[in-house]
Length: 487
Image (cartoon, rainbow, N blue to C red; front, side, top):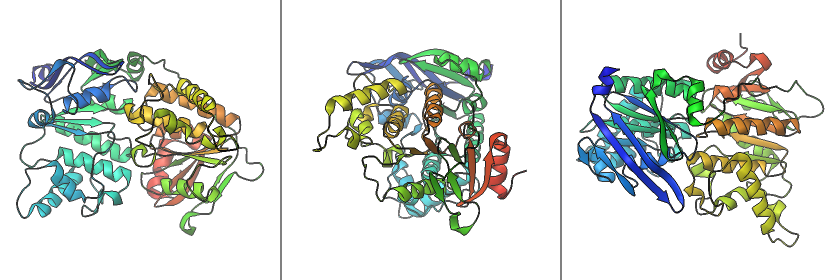
């Protein structure tokens, strides 16, 4: 403990205030990060976490207060970079049209000379292997050819890489949101190693187990202020949630008994003519599990297109989709929050002659803003004014606001705080009890356990079907690695 306290500050923020119109994103926040520590930063969506990260990495200038990198008081991207700060953003910042090696060169300007391509390729391959052993990523590929999990891995590796100077502070904003449990543990192990060697990490995650197992100190933010700052060992999962201002709801979710009566609402033959077929009945919550990138998302896409010939919204469509990569295929960046939400049920809000009933549209948006707690003073604000988690809430509300009998969800809770997750789980179970069917791909085991039945994927094939008490992490991992029946 004393060693951590005596370490020099890498970055400190004192009395930082940032406002966006009438919204106080930061209201006198204080935060310091020292060498040799992993600082866990938690709080609900809209608490100010992303804003203070953008101030520390130089993307935002504070309206009041000061930022210091070591002994140098300064702000801005150049100051942050000179201070050894690197940031892995929740919304990934790689250039999709460039190769992985070229993206490494964009980040590391010191990599010069005629042989920079081979050096960049060697740099990123070595760093990927150091953090994610056995990753199998071809670093000559364009970023657009990678899965979202692979893109996240590449951005993490680029920011930890050392060309001339080792990073002093690496900010990880929801770094495992697209990674499966195995990859997430590899990253957390590397973070612990990096910190032991004297580096500093600012870890932001809604997965509290990652915070408690990896951070040395935890800071809790609420309404733009720091409300708790203690050693990680002084928190438990419950006390951390309570510090965030949430009520912990410990309950056994009542799973639906098997209701395989009549025809399934969705079905799909065995993938690649191997393994098990997929079936979902009315009122079920069916989970898709397994290691990331093993065909779960593609299965969701195929299920959707089996019911709809295109992705255009249709009146009375029986199926809706919640995208996992909100920046790529979820949000309409130039639209308002309201328009992003109501584009799903738009046909149902239109008159016979094609005009949108603005009163009905506003009422629907207000209802879902309240139900799912979208943190904004005005639904006419642009969607990008929201935090990442709040953007995800809008996509979830878009799907549920339709009359679709079946909702497909591609890891929809990425970056959503624990309090909101609990409310969404309540909505899911209520909607399922009323007859709505959910097919839910999730990288979080706690969410998989909420499902009535689970299909485990391996190499694009459904290897196992789990029900009831069989839905355990042990059985999911067994099917993910070995295939076939679980013990």
